[in-house]
Image 1: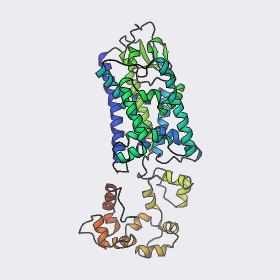
Image 2 (image 1 turned 30 degrees about the horizontal axis):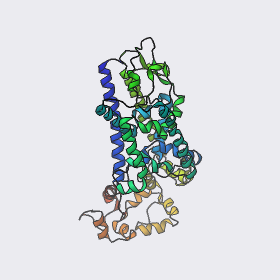
Image 3 (image 1 turned 135 degrees about the vertical axis):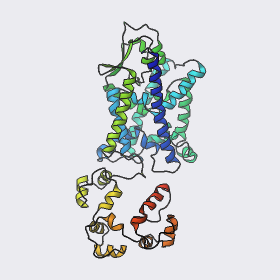
Amino acid sequence: MSNKRNVVLFKLLRYSILAGVLIFVSWQVFSHALGNKIFPAIHGLCPFGGVESLYLYLSQDGLTLAKIFSGTMAIFFMTVVITIVFGRTFCGNICPLGTLQEGAGNAGRLILKDKFIIPRVIDRPLRYLKYVILIISVFMAWATATLWFQVIDPWAAYGHILKPQELFSGYLIGLIILIISLVMSFFFERFFCKYMCPMGAFNALVGILSRSRVVRDTELCISCGLCSKACPVQIEVDKQDVVKSKECINCSKCVIECPEHGALKTSFWGLKLKPIAFLLLTVGVFFGGIFTLQMLGFDRYSGKAEATLREVAKQQGFTVEDFINKYDLPESVNARTKMSKVQELIPFYKMAEINNTSTESLKELLGLPDELDNNTPWGKAYDEVKLSKIAELQGATIEEYISYYELGDEVNAETRWKEVKGLVEEYNKLNSGSESCGGH
């Protein structure tokens, strides 16, 4: 890839994607750390959580470890897919921890004007350390049903940087490893990726199935060595006809640095692709796949985010169809329906059954008229409950209730729930870490 314009465009595009993913993930996890639990914790946005949860997920019909949700499994599944199809491109073109290390490495090259390489006699055996870490981490996670690796995980430590108390009490080892990884990456590119990352080891093993390779044309190659010098994981590209190493992270940096047009190419299952096309295809499939899985119900990344019917049905040991039949829900309900909506659609008589009471007693408790149709959806029935009754059921006076939710002077004891529920729900969203005074 010798066209300078294409080289600049590729670098701009690749670093924009890497920076974009890092910034987005950082915003999410830092927001969580600062108290807004609707955002995911760092564990929920790492595909290795999917590896650690895989045994439980397969053996217990979709259950996951604590701090891991359906959205995490979507990231994990798509990481596996793109690794099989495109090789270790997640490591090279998406992973935010890889981006931090690459940034440190680029700074090192810029300042030191050179690239340092660990001697092969040390480098080669050290590469196997990440596989040992993978085996131990997965075994301990599956045996203990916990995110065992999180204590030493530098990525988990990164997610808690804004919470020093949690960082130093629970993630100190991970913080030390993070600092060491970034300092070492300043001198030796992608240090953690090469020697310690269990997700990198997992991707390396899965990547054996891939047929996406960097191919060298020996007749066009001028043996300048620039490709090998550009490789962040120190593969001797200029000495191979086809790069088959498990260490290759498919970043295409070797291809774009090649000064001889056509000497190095990215082979995608036999088809020759330009680095820009390969990058866009990789990222498009990854994020497009995650979006598709979200549409299928793999859309929760946080314990505060609302569960879907699919998740709740599984937790109760039902299929979605059985749950719908059990609670006599309308045909409009499906696996992706949020549970607040499901609750609103449960018939009034069924809600009485769930609470082990009669429809008459429930109407009396809520101050609803006797003539209310027992098939009325719960949400519609509750909309007619007066605030005075809601406050009473919550153990508060109407004045306390109105003051707590800042409802204004126009609201009084006779106001119906339907007139203020939007205000109450909005208040709860903005104050998700506080105690609730009411609602249903």
